Length: 438
Image 1 (cartoon, rainbow, N blue to C red):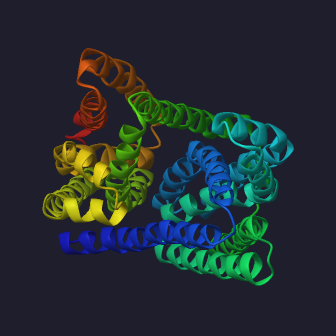
Image 2 (cartoon, rainbow, N blue to C red):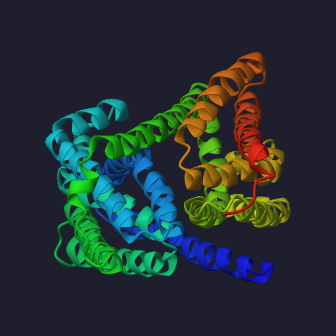
């Protein structure tokens, strides 16, 4: 396979995923605009809190997508349709079970959201209404995480993009009809999301069943040895996600202790990280699929070429992001807020934003590599060590610098994750460098 073909294959996976990623924040803007036109600020406040709680749970459950991508890609590389079908059924079960558990524990979710929000009775009422409707979409939403991962692993990213865009468009249209047209308000917005989640689930399931020839390897995937490996992989990635979430949550709460303006500025600056992730995640998804395919085929030389290829595109995109942030940083801040105080305060922290893509793209890329390899243990250990030995100690040593300490520690944490996984990757491939490809 020529270098040009490899570049095309990577971009054919990455670009649809980048476009798909962009539709999600756009949907959030539509829902925010609809709720923002309801009669009272408590509607927006309550929905924001409820959405945050549900979204955080889904984010932690991202291990379903990650493990599905790596295992599906390896099955593709080994040209084993039955193995691909087995991955689908093995991961569908925990996704549905966690979703059902969320439905059963909806009272706890409402109480948790209300407690942390320290909200007024009106806001608590909105939180209660939204969660009790939205939670019924949890089985589909969590299964969709797994289905997206499975389809990426099979290199069907265009289908993922199409299904996601159609589902999000349906969500937006239904939100307008139910919330505004029928006057259901917050309940209508939540119901629209649930319907869209089950629509995406139905479409994705049909695609997977067609691609696997309606295979039902039930006897195989119930074997303890095979299923235990999948559960251990999910456990490691879950612990990795929890450690990352703890670090980001600490940064948010510590910023809040420094004052209302600081936490507001950090929320604005984190939008640059979100923008960066839209592109770098797309490259990482492609690397996951291609590296997993090479591992499944037993071709280590091809695997190493694809990692280098991913590094070229990830690094190039990071440079582009940094240039855009250097040139347009103040304009982007102005789009995000018209408060003069926040704009002036943000200027003190813009240098961190300029270098953010250059320091963070390594961890995005190497996460993709290890997801493709399905080495969850390395991802878990790297996250825990970088959190406990880099982020928190560095923040403590520089805490006298206030909010600067948080950003210095956060950037060092991102870089350390990339470097530690890079070191683990070099140790992994060095003994096999002289081995012939299979």
